[in-house]
Image (cartoon, rainbow, N blue to C red):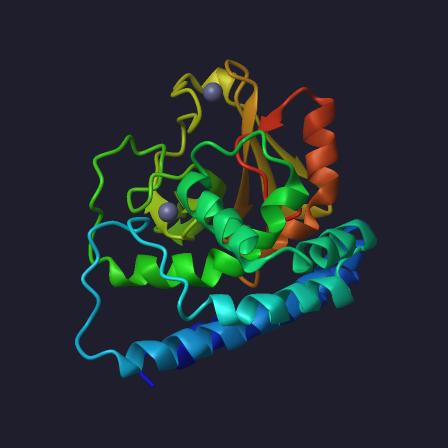
Length: 276
Ligand SMILES: [Zn+2]
Ligand SMILES: [Zn+2]
């Protein structure tokens, strides 16, 4: 079972973190409860993918992360996934899953394929719900493809993911020496890459006085790293302030931060699963 146990542990950690954040963030409580069910589904899907990979002889030779979306293993689980969303999601999203389940499988395939090609690149204007269904379903597959790619195949600006070319979802500060080193976390395949601390990942601004950082007193590990030149902001999870944080999950709890940043006139470069 090479590879599988570690990944499942990561899912379990995400579930535990969502549970522990629920009580502290009432505004995000309903979504975090639902998110636990999503991660449980993703964990089962990963186990199925791992089993299918073992049946294939030899490894998979990948040219690029998005080159081919192989739905053979995934598609049989899509109906079950829609029913998880329908049973546990907040009302409007549950309803969209119910409607989606009524469509023929060709519609499912074209929606999954469109997301696979465009996510993190051309999808800034796509609504949160339209994005949610393919995004949460394909995330484990994108993560597993990223783990199969030995090194970055793309020549891109460091502002985009070196594996798949997507925009970053988050910044992550990890302890290094006396301070923290900043990484960007890919919104599509969840790979992290190192990125300078005083540099706007949207427009390339380098002047420190144009790049204010805001932190709320009650959640000092969640930073709004703004840029006054382009008016975009990056949310950064500071693991040097809270070593128990899991960036992907803590981001979902930070609803109040999104509202605050919007009030200040800042826009997020790439929204999270919740669409905020
Ligand atoms: Zn990526
Ligand atoms: Zn900027």
